[in-house]
Length: 303
Image 1 (tube, rainbow, N blue to C red):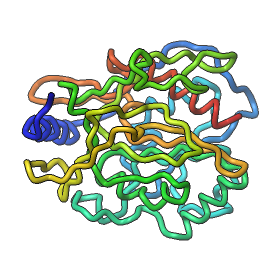
Image 2 (image 1 turned 60 degrees about the horizontal axis):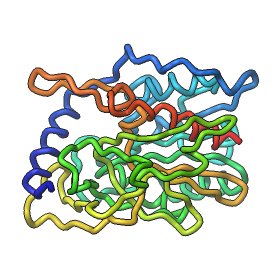
Image 3 (image 1 turned 180 degrees about the horizontal axis):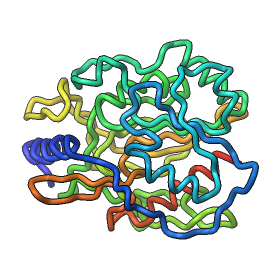
Image 4 (image 1 turned 90 degrees about the horizontal axis):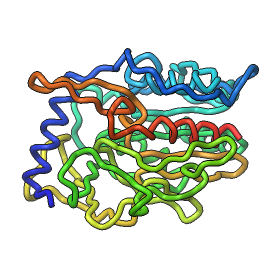
């Protein structure tokens, strides 16, 4: 079992990794039959809120998977309004932060979105829009807390960890029910069978009763409430996160949303640490089913 000191060392290495982390441009998704043809659903990837993950940046691989399935992917650099949201079928928001968090990751984290934007997104989903909200560890969880709250999901500006595993890569498996068996993980006409999912740090969150969890946090999961990102010690407050989720989906009015607390799992990145290269994302050998879950999510949202 990992001790708080181990958490410090692991997270310190991750912070160093984040300073030398870049997209794996050589990543090519495994071949599969596209679901969509012309006219394909339009997917907007938010790039108007200092996003850590963008279409041609850290979510280059994310975009490749979507385009391979026939989806039309475009960046959205504007604020969220009823008018511009009507131009897309699916809105992806990945690791948005306020301007104040672009240089220093210190609590408390302000919202990345204005109240008008939050109201516009919530109403758009209620009227039939489709939202894929991804918010990682602090400060991303705090930056999206108010937006998530509009859909009754409870985010924490934290770092989640399973203290019962020796690795910073978490593996969710059907064999122990940490990976739930539901519409997004079971094989059907338009969905891949998903047996395991790898995630890379992130946050855990509480879901409303009407939502369905995909990634279940079992006993041993905790959330560290740090005042400064990547700084932990014996006095760092932590919350018991057993029973929480790191990925879930729900209906909202006439629309749908999928919420995840970790972003690297749908990327393909290379991190250089002291001469070693680590691959956090779909290019990691432990993440062979991650692209399948991404495809399933986007197909479910489009239905």
